[in-house]
Length: 194
Image 1 (cartoon, rainbow, N blue to C red):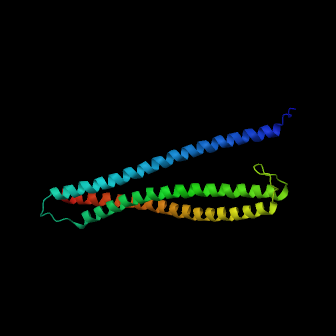
Image 2: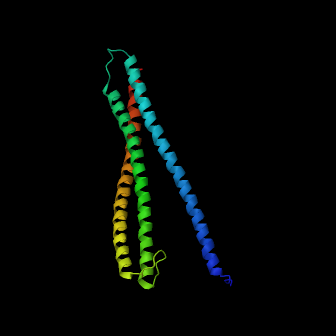
Image 3: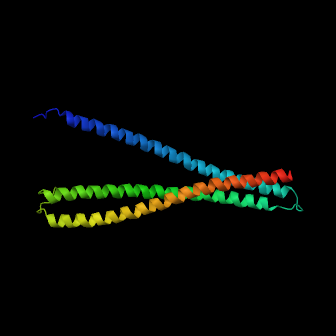
């Protein structure tokens, strides 16, 4: 027996397929952007350490009797701060990505348990893998316990994701500001002494 063509079903199916394609495209684009940002901050940290190394070498070549002004020490401090902030940013971003993935997983588990709970609460269900009688009270109790576990996991991971995102955001600003100040102090030192 064949089922009749249902235009509404086809519309839902096509819309879901289009939504899934767009989600996949957005996910792929997001992953590419994340990879480029992490590579950028890795290079930024390397550039700060390179500038620091170059300026220390230059100061050493100027001779032992050279008085090193506070601007040079300030530049070194800011460049070290910028390099450290870049590394903290990348590490915290990895923690954010993990917490975000666990949040999505916990959210899906809670939604699945809610649907399962609705089904077993309203319908008579047969176990597919057992010959014993379906125990609705046992299943409802298990669902409630599992939902509580996943709900706590969801809340914990959401807090972790929010905390790590804040660290990422702050570290980006610290890295950018410290790098600009560090290079400004290096340029000031160079203009005064060369």
